[in-house]
Image 1 (spheres, rainbow, N blue to C red):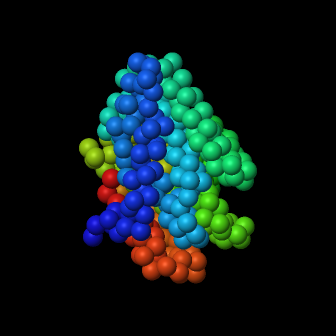
Image 2 (image 1 turned 45 degrees about the vertical axis):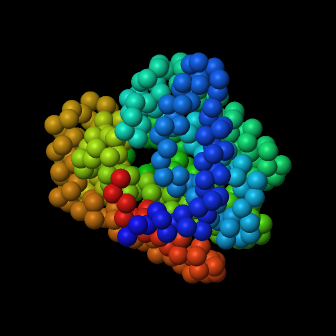
Image 3 (image 1 turned 120 degrees about the horizontal axis):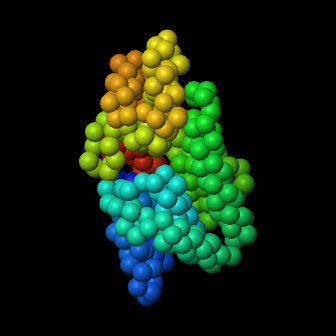
Length: 325
């Protein structure tokens, strides 16, 4: 099934308008800055977050300039956070192409990220909507807090599913949450409607991150990172957390400690990945996605009346769960 065509159908023209505005925001005449922004523009992507903003606005009213500038502000904030994350994580790739820090250097990457963040604030100011401006500013704080929590968790010897969810709720889920909530606000939703849309976005974001984490246990050129990359960065994700907490293999716990200490080698990572697969980690993570998917469907049943938008959001949920890159 071509999920993306169904997802985009109600907002095809609006999405084109968003892409044009977003690309314009990442354009600069200066040589190095212009080159770095052009490098980022080439990533493209499927625009799942701005699509969510547009769909939620249309569910509650119209897609307006407020919606478009909100969507651009949100996507720019997300883009800036990725540029900075690559510096923090010392990543050399992003979506299958060289990261900004790898193509230039850390100094350039940090400054480019700062420029994009300021551009995000500029676009959200164009909305003239105080609540949306406050929400985006608070989102920036949440994303930074989540990144710090993730870094501090690497030093924590406990292997906790609760902490895993705390981290992703302040990172990936917070972005989807904001896209749904701000989209709803821009479309004229009431406070109660906005809060329910926000919760829907959080469920989507949690599913999205769990699916991303599952990818790390399999080889894939499409996602631009090798198997076990999260472990190389000191991160233990839901599949391995489940496997470790539901078995009693001291040797595997020793390897998990080496992940957190940053001393694990590729062969040991391969052992831990295989252990996770053999002890139900992938199946457990997929079960959790199914639980959040059911909550998303319940929201759609109760709060989305237009059939076209309804079909689009159902396809959106299915795509998040079933995507293979």
